[in-house]
View 1 (cartoon, rainbow, N blue to C red):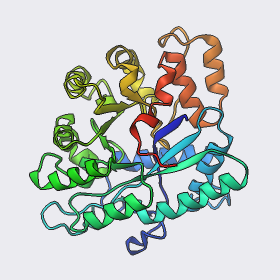
View 2: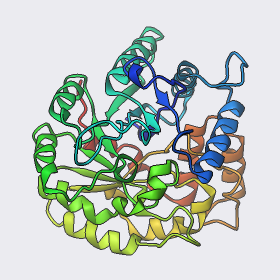
View 3: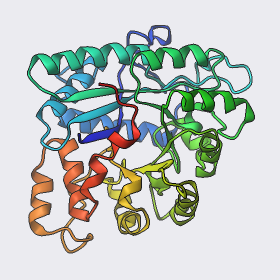
View 4: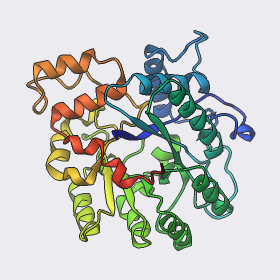
Amino acid sequence: MKIDIHCHVIGNGKDIGNVDNDVYLNAEDNQHWFTRMFASLLEEELERLGADLNNDGAISTGEYLDLLFRMLRLSEETDGIVLLCLDGLFHPKTGKLDEKRTDLWVSNRFMAGRIREMNERLSAGGSRKRFFLGASISPNRKDWREELDFADSAGAVLVKLIPSTQHINLTERKHKDFYKALADRKLPLLCHVGPEYSFPEGIRNMKLDNYKGLAAPLESGVTVIAAHCASPVFPVIDKNVMKDFFTFMDKANAGATVKLWADTSAMSLSTRLPIIPEVLDTFPAEWLVHGTDFPIPIDGWAHMPFVTRDVTPGEYLSIVKTKNPFDRDVRIKRAHGFDEAILENAEKVLRLRS
């Protein structure tokens, strides 16, 4: 089964007390100039994809999920998509919700219900394609055990964290019980590593997204997926630590079982074009898993023949003609030389249930 393990959920709910019924999105009280600009670019891209179904100038949570539904149903390259929740920002010391710094909250309960509904629609239409729940649970929560129990019972296939955005110091000893609970449930941890530019708190707290913090969950027996191969977003200004990360990864995977994976999400972003050859030369396919990072732009136009590695004119024409961004991402990676195995490696990592 070809699975995209890294797809974000967005919406336009404004009531933080209603997160179990809608996606909460409000960065206006905690904005950063870069994320304001980036949000506008994302909205324009989603409008081009036809997400604004009623043409009211706003993309609702329902419209966004309907877009994902249509794209998976019609995809020629993807059989399943993991939809990622994002827990609120809970204060590291008090465990209380920080409403001002919580810019996006996609609750496990909301997404569990919507994923169940969308999968029923797929089945009713005769499709075997499927959405999966990527839960998010901050270990800073006082009630993280209860939240994890719910995610477990709801069929979560992984748990996602963005340490910088959620103010999580992965190395704190108090999180050891959380990691052990993940290991006991065989739930892998998908963790953002490297620069984070999508959220104001991500920009302000990038030091928390250091790959070295992954040692803590690994030592507790958690299977970990490092997002983006710890690669720079803007190679000109971001420090490139991929070689060091590979050394770290090589040590973690010294045994017979792969404990530390890396995903290829947002590799199609035009700014990452210069580092794709290094990713291919550094990381073995048997340690990589496919992801898009949608709705982060999947820039087909940038992967031009003769300019970028191994891309032929025919492949380029196929890429730019592909309207479905999930298909486009796969074809970009295939043209660059990523092994087909990364599309199905998810089945070796995710906690899938029949």
